[in-house]
Image 1 (cartoon, rainbow, N blue to C red):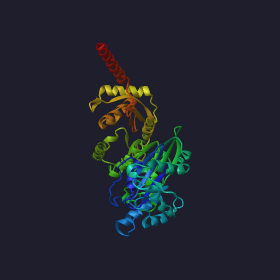
Image 2 (cartoon, rainbow, N blue to C red):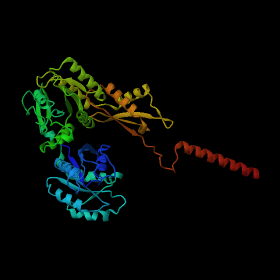
Image 3 (cartoon, rainbow, N blue to C red):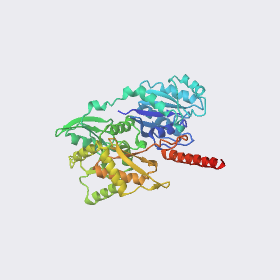
Image 4 (spheres, one colour):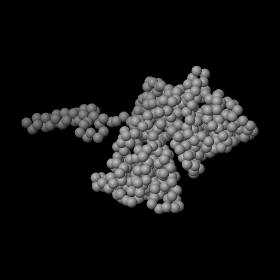
Length: 473
């Protein structure tokens, strides 16, 4: 399983700034105002080859009552959800009573890995600023300047090196074949679908939202092929997550998505698409997982209702036109067997192997069909492409001025590669790399052309001086 890292501390110590740095996003609002973040914010982080889930929290204040109490409760829920706690303090403010109080509470979590992170270290004497924090008894403070991205690599190396042994992919030991995660909002029929696909009552089904509390792995065989189905707890809006036992469900579902090869997003045909479905879909795409969409409870609907649902799906899901949509009834088994064909195609596309020559040929044909625009008066050149990974398929394109490739052209390349490679059910990622100019920043070294020109000029000056001397004689 991927580790879960919670960022906790007083308000305005830089938790949201660090969250944005770790997730390489701007999902968390950042401003010099204490208490800006109130709810928990989840995001996926990546450092080198390691992936993890980060939770941003609103802060634990000294006042009681009102919104401060709510923010503190959100923070302590994040602590209970997490495997690793980054306790953030303000190095400029020094060790204050509020920090000492939080440290005392954190020491009671014996089973958690706790790291003391001293933020805002820029512009101060690090040795002096960190001295007071040793009194918290949480080990050596790790200095960072999140706003400047200083010390973050050292922080993550320290965290992951100490915790690496605890987070081996344990799901691999108990699963086999294609791992399929069924995800969606509560009570859309995920567990019913899992039981139907397994052919037995493997998980509890009850007409009450939130019956499933954990992610349940079920290995099985179908027509000589191995699969592992993962039934997950329903993910609802954070404002609705108020039961103590349910607070772990979101993390378990997000970890199951990252652990799966193919995700089945289960929608309720009678309720249509809501914002929470789109948020969950966004996490699936961010994780780069292959996707199949199952619109459940399709039986018994009137023709005009079915047409309305199809129009709504086409309107709101036009950005994932690569995913196959199935209209099913998990309760009666209608069209459930058709899911396997799309699952197989999506998995095969996600782990496709592509040659450099094939990708470069597709790139050249795409550029010839639609030329790149000019950038600063120069034509952007894309030279060659090669495979950068799978799950999802990643194409790395090398050229010059690749930072200036427009987003519209990037989408054009994605669609071109998808169509040429016949990818179905999986997102595709395009990464650009600009070739380094070997003479950039080296003032004393001339290019071969400049060197030849300089030699001709020097030879011309030498001949001119020689003629002048001869005339004087």
